Image 1 (tube, rainbow, N blue to C red):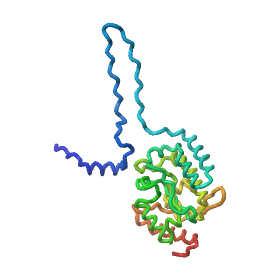
Image 2 (cartoon, helix red, strand yellow; image 1 turned 180 degrees about the vertical axis):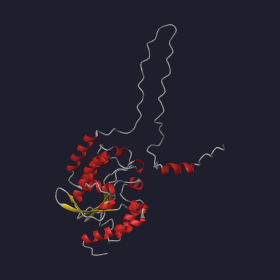
Image 3 (cartoon, one colour; image 1 turned 60 degrees about the vertical axis):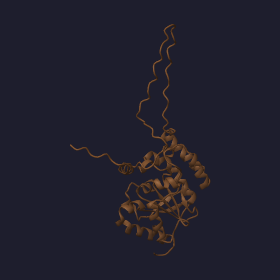
Length: 272
């Protein structure tokens, strides 16, 4: 058999990108599987006996700080979020929060973008690569589509507020685990309370199920109004498709447009 030619550097990079490996976490690669070599034997002197060598402790491999137990982390997040009096205080608390392991693999916290005084708040699931680099939600391809969507009903990032349930990018854009979602949930709940919008728009299935407490899929929930309860008031909430989903399935843009028209009507901007 004729062996296949070795892949080029470009082909290798394309393979890693498809696998979700799109950024380096350290300057130098670390072989996690390599065994630590045993220290060489100490020769004994011929004239006099020598003391047996003491065992040498193996150096620890740095893997990032260990996160606390899930129940401890969730309780800590709830307490911290509850005590935040302002959005800026909440951001600072989240910057120093150590209860979510995603913090140690992400580049930075992706807190929010837009106007905190806006009447409408959009919430997605988690940051992607572009968001992790810039520290702002929805700045990649899906962000550009979201800008077009809200622009179609007379909104922009100065008249809307945008955030995510998860404020740190999961490695390789993988799906956040239920534990990670529950740890981060108190922060986005407090964020919604502090913004106190008239309309809450959940983008996609994960944020809809997490914030609105439903097990139904986005095909059943989109376009339906829900009541989102906070400590101070009830906020009207509408699920719709995530822009990333619309990029993959553009045929559903028609339904998303119907949702946007319903939002515009509730905001009192008239029929568009």
